[in-house]
Length: 239
Ligand SMILES: Nc1nc2c(ncn2[C@@H]2O[C@H](COP(=O)(O)OP(=O)(O)O)[C@@H](O)[C@H]2O)c(=O)[nH]1
Ligand SMILES: [Mg+2]
Image (tube, rainbow, N blue to C red; front, side, top):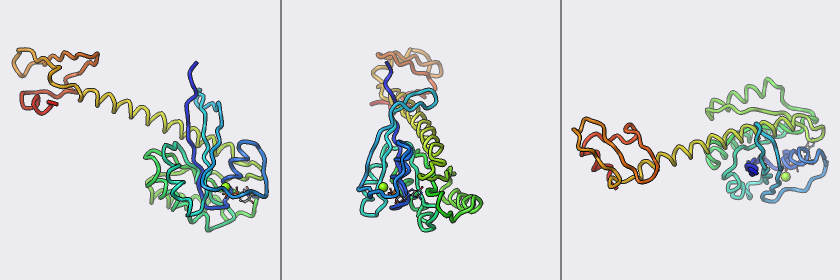
């Protein structure tokens, strides 16, 4: 039986914006008005999540927003496939810091980390209209050359939470797939280059005719990949 694939989702944002509540609501459908602060990072696994007909074990990493835990968050961001950046819809300061969180993940996280912005506590008196958020998002787009989906959620009512995680899972799974394909391509390229000239037997044909390559392993090289045209390039290709 095929094993489930792994997916790593990171949840970041300032302290008290509602990261832990968001995860708890997603996993248990519970909400508590009193939560204890997260120290460093917490991780929980959501097993057997079906994404595009494949089963995943999704690790959701909850992080502490305080500066003093930044190095732990930095380490946690490694190998993540998607990250939810949370801000509190009722607290303008927390929105201001979203740009710093994007910057942080862009410099510390993996290259193709998928970012989803989550406005929390929608049940409280909101400070933002959709139009305002849209213009903020346009500014982010201009600054980071990237567009980020935004979800408005409430851990009290549950609004928007499934959609936010679902999109994070789907984008994360796609990022993982793209990365694997890229790595496989790179491996096959490296394999081609590793073949030394001692494994090549050039036929006694004029140099402008086809070179035949006899490769001891089963790799078949096309001439276009090899780019051997004359003796000069053969020496360069050596070892
Ligand atoms: N009304 C309301 N309160 C929330 C919501 N999400 C979180 N809270 C409250 O905000 C406080 C901080 O939440 P917490 O999840 O610990 O934030 P974290 O530090 O980002 O993990 C707690 O008192 C939560 O009950 C929400 O959607 N609505
Ligand atoms: Mg927390």
